[in-house]
Image 1 (cartoon, helix red, strand yellow):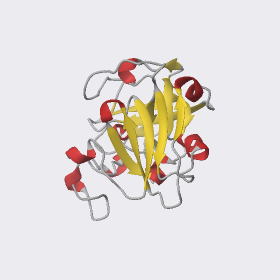
Image 2: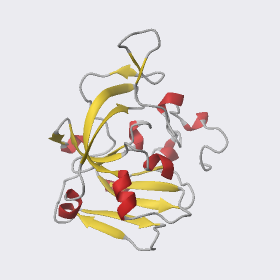
Image 3: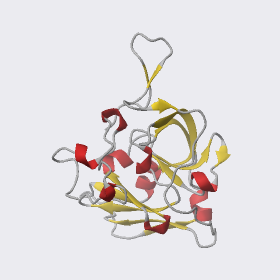
Image 4: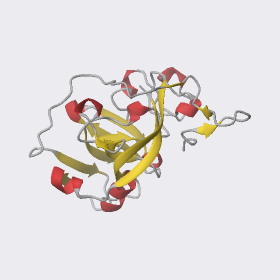
Length: 211
């Protein structure tokens, strides 16, 4: 599991320690690959499938998902392009809530998070189940904008931000690791910013499946 998202620098009172190679960002830049999808609430669905405990697919429409318990989380966002947002407030549904409502099978070890246009991001089940991993609908008390992922984006504070896709549509439980979109294209399979795991050439044995 990753280290805390922000820490006090030793010997520097009040100074935040960022992950190596990161710089503090004022504001929130828009970064994504591809066009912004149009949100169609009557056709939107969030699915949990794959290696579920009961072998069934679990689905919520937008109204049902919006009625799930809402939690606010204060957590940093570390982009692999080297900017960090510190102390951002995210509101939404905790990943642990989804895990409780649609438990994975005992043999599940990883998840693939699926988003619009077939975009995907893989991670260990333990990372997905971390205390502050959240399916965010709000940031700073306001609904996300479309450019920042409305209606739903995943925030995994202890991993680089690409691990939390915008425009999320579902989660697949997996019994073996499989690389997601950016992980197949040269990004690190784990993506821990405190270990500066940016690129696949940095991977060590056991960090991920063969490319």
